[in-house]
Length: 499
Ligand SMILES: CC(=O)N[C@H]1[C@@H](OP(=O)(O)OP(=O)(O)OC[C@H]2O[C@@H](n3ccc(=O)[nH]c3=O)[C@H](O)[C@@H]2O)O[C@H](CO)[C@H](O)[C@@H]1O
Ligand SMILES: [Mn+2]
Image 1 (cartoon, rainbow, N blue to C red):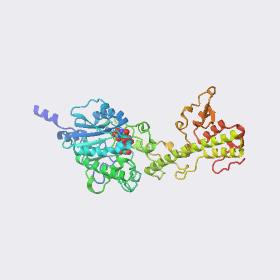
Image 2: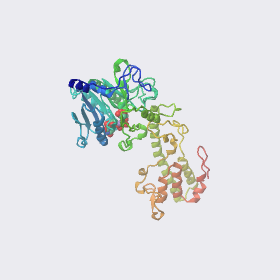
Image 3: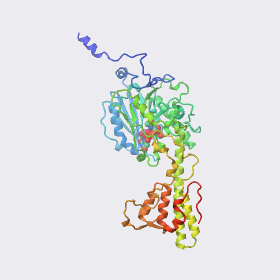
Image 4: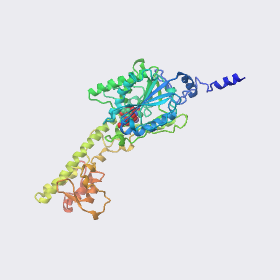
């Protein structure tokens, strides 16, 4: 009787698996027969029972360089709550600040190993540098010390179970932004010169650079290849569009049987943090160079999360009538921003120089027609330039993570004068009152003075025309402005009325 009760206690209770009643809204196996792990495709109790006796050690790596230290606490705490709970986990923290590692209480048989890495000026180098460091780690350190290894971005959090159901010799995570995109819209590297090149009509899934894993041996091979390919590119002065992620995707491309048996999993339980790229990567026009991170979802329970992912992905989808691929758009927009910045700098110089010249003519009263002509030129130079590559009328596609407002004409910003590049000492807010009206010099050493308030209005102008108009009215007497017909100017080939 006692024995029977004992037997009953150790008997495993789980739902009968069904050979026919599978989820039909998603593929659970790839075309080369690799399982795709989603909610509902495995039984946690059953699978734990299979793996528990194996006494596995899971190495887990994360890089934390510079400002990214702010993410580590959440990453570790969420991993302690959801990631391989009850299994042996060794975290390898690669950091430039070992002293700043937060104190997080770890479960039994779980420990942190801290490895010092140099900091770097470019985040791209930090991200890509992970491949070489992982190649080294998997070569020596982990020999016989771990069975599997997973490598994560630190700006990520676990929201629900991530455990043995993800184990396989090579594991890739389908990027949540792109899980149902046509392959030509994947953000793969499209330049054939790069080792990461994948043509638009190739590629199976688009994989995230922020989570991958497998056996120590497989991850060693993977990271070794990526390191090699990255350095070949570097020697050719080419950097793949999404850096290590591009090389990872290239390596995972199904050519031959090497991926057979690889396990892919959807990122339903693991999300990257919505982070302020602008703070972390100051140099970048981040909305264009980085996809916005995927927002945390409500993964508090074990329920099916596919709908959430779908909604999220729908939001990210480019406008349907657009034929530009995201990759083309990123490249075009990067160039566009660079052009605009250069153009703005030039325009600023032209406008200021022209105003200064005109002012000098005026003060010497020598050449009135010349003055008027140069005023006319000032106004024309502020006209939005005609752009050839991106037509202002064409709506730009909404990039995943980029604000819809990007679709407005880039010309609207064609004269943007960063205050700091003008004279910072003269930077005042328009809210200042006229009573404080001491004058300021519009450019050091020129002697061209304007009222502080007028200057403040000018530099706060949101368009080229308004900027010029504020400045002209501040510098020149109204009679002169009337003669050049400041208000009657026509755009787009409208001839300036000659004096
Ligand atoms: C979720 C996901 O798939 N993310 C990938 C994506 O952009 P992400 O925007 O997610 O890249 P990211 O800014 O998170 O950088 C990747 C990782 O490098 C580390 N880091 C980076 C910068 C820094 O100053 N300090 C630091 O420690 C950190 O672990 C970070 O998580 O594309 C990158 C390459 O462009 C990488 O492939 C990322 O893995
Ligand atoms: Mn990230």
